[in-house]
Image 1: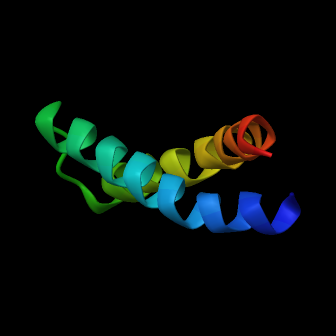
Image 2 (image 1 turned 135 degrees about the horizontal axis):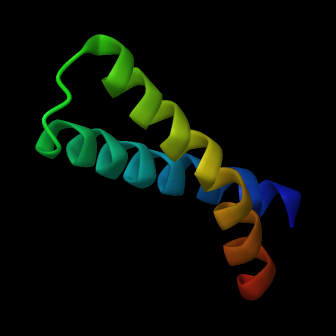
Length: 58
């Protein structure tokens, strides 16, 4: 199940980090720090999400 979670993480992290960056830009924060923070928050939030999805699929 761990390999499935790692595979799903690569997909989910990309989607969540991209969505977070778009949300940051729409909110009007155009600094590099804000964009990187949004991407980091999306990548961190993807870890438990990918674990839950892998558990449901497995």
